[in-house]
Image (tube, rainbow, N blue to C red; front, side):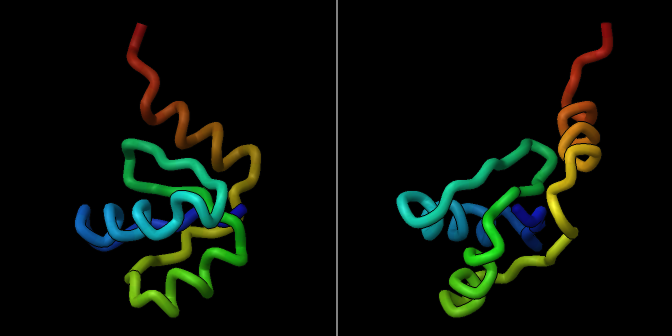
Length: 72
């Protein structure tokens, strides 16, 4: 899985519509999305703008979850 980010909400919405039913993935309220590596080429061919953040390592996913965790 690869973490990607989109330049704006419209691009993120377009990506979500494109990816649903084609690829598994996960999205966070922070704007990042985890997608399989195969989805990168498909999104590029579909004309969806995105930036690659890097591999979805365990530590990276924990940091995304922590960013959304409410203070207790």
